Image (cartoon, rainbow, N blue to C red; front, side):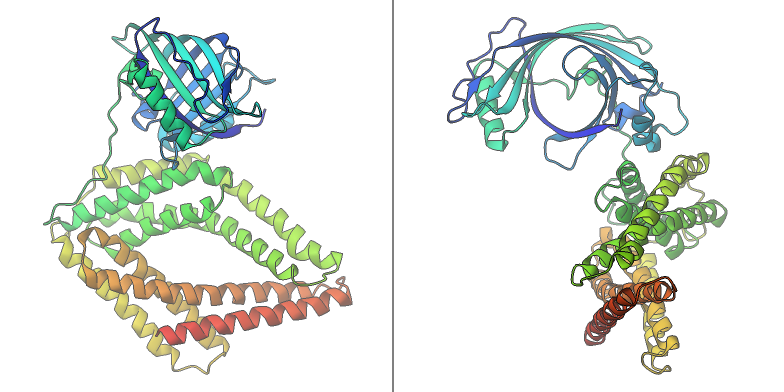
Length: 493
């Protein structure tokens, strides 16, 4: 069965066993409640022996009973108060084996570790549905009596009662009213964020992201930045596998920023330790880049064709074939993210952060080494801009030099952003300046790449004359867009 995704937004309360539930009729204008339904839920929770999932605020369970029997993975969400849930129904395969779709979502956390049962939880649940005036579900109110057994060494059995109020179609206002009503009825703030946390105890999160001291060392700054972007890489990994909106792009940026830090601060971490990680990140960036570039090209082609009455053979060449290529690139990306090579790179990156071999520059003040790094990157960008004057505008050499300037601007931007925790305005201004250059010349580079692809397609002898004509019009649009981008760059500089 294919996985389903949802955002779980709920309130959780501790209550005394047997506490009567309040009347939820009229919780909002015209709302009523349905007939209560009772279920017996039996769940086994899985984690690594050292509870890596729990430490990263994730839960993985196999549950029977109720209306959603199957495997469930819950992890943090960007939605305030919400958690992202991925569910896989029991299917034709073994119901006792963690589904591959869920294992892929947690690979960056568990790596090569084995998943083992860490707790069993049985819940006697009574569910009451809150309905609007038209009978549409707004929320579910659950009265739970829980019996949990920790399977970890030294674990025991625990029993308690709790209430949950989960939004189905309601809004934050309904959640606020429910919170007031349930507390007035005797509910208390939940002592744990989840049933599993209460069963096995809250697990400490080994979070290396912390505020830098005012007199941080160069090594401290590099560790801080690497940890931040490492966490971004972990967060976008499962979303990139799903091809979620902008996920491949953001994961690519995270990988680029880690490489940029390792390049921008040579001598802070011993090169024999930093270089292999940088090399692996470069290869990862190429795989991510292929998927991202095809994604951008596809979106651009669809937009360009929307303005034209394009024949079918041109639609196939610009959209259908590009979509097929994008799917192949995503398949290659998912494979790359599932290899031992990728897992080893993640392990090596963790060691760079937690146990780096200091280089000769490690103890220099962070403010000094950051200023040197940003200053050097700025000088390289300006030098590339001066070299542009040697070439005739719009010549191949001139356009290639614009590409070089764009890459230098990107390096400057990432280096300046790595110094952001130091709160130095001059470095922030350099980064903002570089961002403008990168944006304008990035837009120009997109048109160059796209026009090159249009030229390749136009050479296909099987293409209809109508398609070739429309290709010419599209190419003219792209040329005009590129010139506008360069004009913006020139004004900015």
